[in-house]
Length: 333
Ligand SMILES: NC(=O)c1ccc[n+]([C@@H]2O[C@H](COP(=O)([O-])OP(=O)(O)OC[C@H]3O[C@@H](n4cnc5c(N)ncnc54)[C@H](OP(=O)(O)O)[C@@H]3O)[C@@H](O)[C@H]2O)c1
Image (cartoon, rainbow, N blue to C red; front, side, top):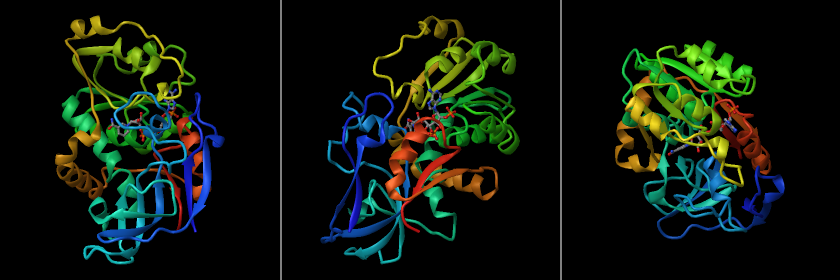
């Protein structure tokens, strides 16, 4: 049988496990040009919270009763396409389920000898690409500049901060536990970091850690953290709006200080982006990430939950910051 996790209800605030349902169905059979894939690892990502809601977004919501969407690494079980053979390891978007039938053109084959297969859902996949284009293409960081990363110990943030270090920048991270702060400074070589949950005055802390101001801000979280960074920009600062994790579970929008006048004061630029906009340049990004990875300059951490049935719990935990690095579910070994 095929176990699937479907959306049972639209969450109010932080999702509950009861917003998901585990259902069973027959294992599907691939048609012409299709491939049956067995999921090995499922990627859990904050964007999935948006798909659970009917709020206007850049992608349509998951409908009640539909299988939750998600990126996966899996193994080909049956193939009706000459480019895939049983046993091939592939990356695709097969969702929260044990098995899926997919069009062959929607799968990419992985070479397990080159890098651990889970990196295709992290540092050598959409996560690495998000950090790469969101930092380099939008912020153009220059060696010696001060770069601040929020959500810094998460999947995207930890890669963005390391890329900024590779480019010779001074990097300050913001994260939600002392263990994450220690990880950023001691393991990833950040120049400074602070725990926003034990810091009362974010602005004063940023001023202390960035005495010349913030040249580049890679924003994963929004909210009060971002407000504080924006009030400490340097002249000609660049801000990349990657995500707004602190807002995803809010039922009513929060009002922050009006910051637009600061853009005049600092002649600053703020730009949001979607990694999918960069699809034509993914080859360039993946080549560079693979080079840095091969040189040992990009490290990565994973938080792995075992069992598809535990995906809802792991997802809720990730939204609350229980992960360091990339949150994954091991669906099958
Ligand atoms: N634009 C794009 O194309 C694109 C692509 C991928 C991801 N993203 C966005 O990038 C961001 C990071 O994604 P990710 O996959 O790397 O997730 P992640 O950072 O690994 O996980 C989410 C993290 O958000 C932090 N968080 C939760 N609530 C928070 C709050 N109230 N204030 C501050 N931090 C909070 C938690 O860390 P703490 O312990 O530090 O609180 C948690 O670990 C997300 O906002 C995501 O939507 C955007």
